[in-house]
Amino acid sequence: MRVLLVEDDSGLGSGLQVALKPEGYTVDWLTDGLQALQALETDCFDLVILDLGLPRLDGLSILRQVRAQGKNTPILILTARDAVQDRIDGLDSGADDYLIKPFEMTELKARIRALLRRSSGRAQPIIKYRGIELDPSSQKTCYDGIPVELTRREYTLLHEMLCQPGHVFTRDTLQQMLYGWDGEVESNAMEVHIHHLRKKLFPKLIRTLRGIGYVIDKEEM
Image 1 (cartoon, rainbow, N blue to C red):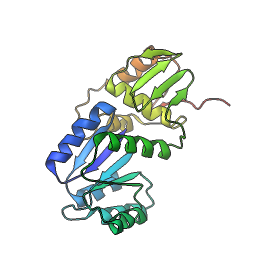
Image 2: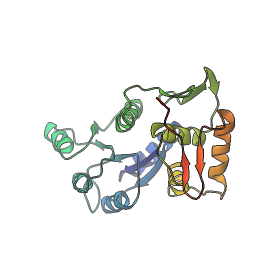
Image 3: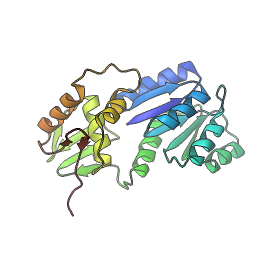
């Protein structure tokens, strides 16, 4: 899952990047409000963590413009502004959640999981697909009841595709999701990740559409 973090506190920003990486999130971090708005207009993210007090463009303005453009990306406001009216303004402007600093990292992670679950239309926390069970809270994966060891990027790739069965992902989209802006990507990295998932789970899990991308087919009813 690809997360855009918009936070001008360097200590908190770097701490969030470090804390969320083991959870399978690719975190792209910006400290400037105008840059964040431009990124949201040109890039795709699964979730946004948004501070309110930002240089050049404040968080509420970003939020309102993003929603005015019809984008429904889940947005979690993370701020020190704790007045009731601030919370009302944030939620009424289109935020999906509002968390006040200081906060517990475990609570932030739980709120992120809940937002992503709702945005993908899932009611249950466990993702199930043809014998696969994936638990986002523990990062554990089983196949036919047997635990399967996945690397962080294998897990992230599987999680993203299982959340949207039937959706065709281009190679570039998946690379951005796994590596973000800063990651160095070898030319065959995506093919290697997909090969390993097929080998660890089952060969027909991910279907290649030549010249287009990859898809996990919807389960037949």
